[in-house]
Image (cartoon, rainbow, N blue to C red; front, side, top):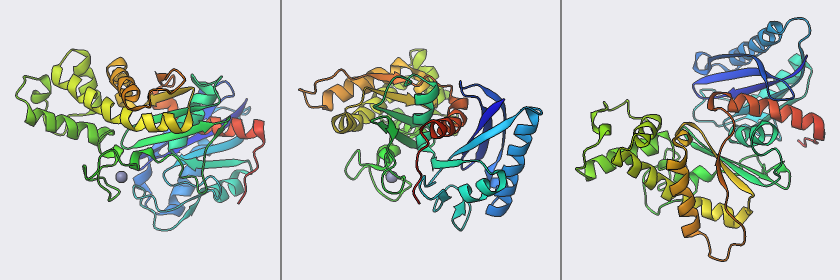
Amino acid sequence: MAIAVGIDVGGTSTKLGAVTRDGQILSKSRFTTRDFPDETAFLVALSNHIDQLVADLGQEGEILGIGIGAPKANFFTGVVEGAVNLLWNSPVDLRGYLQNYFNVPVIVTNDANLAAVGEKEFGAARHMNNFLSVTIGTGLGCGIYMSGALVHGQNDVAGELGHTSAKVGGRECQCGKKGCLEAYVSAKGIVRTAMKLLSKYEEDSSLRSIPAGQLSPTVIGQEALRGDKMALLVLEFTGDILGYKLADMVAMFNPEAIFLAGGVANAGPLLLEPTLESIKKYLYSTYPDPIVLLPSALKDDEMAVLGGGALVWEHLENQMVIVN
Ligand SMILES: [Zn+2]
């Protein structure tokens, strides 16, 4: 069985899986990224996990390529450099190391792109050539897929929607700026909104009985689904500020659809509806096309690995030229 190995290198854990052409994950594994603060030890551990993944498939397992998403990974150079949530000091040549070890094509990209390419190959964007994929998790990532290809920009940092300004002089962001979208629309940002609204209003809310530290977007989403007014207000506020920035993206890119992914997107219409309303409110009134905002068709826990696999299948089919 020919497979692509999809890998998601995250600040906390690294996940990998053997992905078939039709988007099945045949075997998967994960390990703690922080157990390997030394980059060489990390590369050895990663290679061992890939070997094991293929061994799990038995004699017929054959790797056709490896696709990896990592913070600050550069599609053109294959190198990860300057990722604050990874502990490595020096640039890490992911592509060079793995290509040398496994002797197959290795495609590396910024982790925010995985959801977009996964959606295109295995999700709801199969028949689309122009769409945006927004992932709300620890941070806010955006993959831009235009004219049938991922938009990488000059150094594979295109689509940093999370660090565009949503509010002048607003909340402090971990990037050092103030008022970034990510400071409002991310796991931390949404919890911050909840804390603020709970202290501002005296309205009864089940959120008040949740111990600090256990409040999360998932919990807020669940309480909103149960009809908790404060939880609903948190999602409305979040949708409004997200839609404000997405209106700009719609004006600039004219996408056929925008997909929302990540834990908080599980709140479904309770987040999607205020976001869509907000896009319409802030978009210029003569915008010609309908605005389509959809939840991702991929499961949260599989999205990144599928995206890694999708990078490989897309590469093999397009035979993209990677220019150093
Ligand atoms: Zn920022």
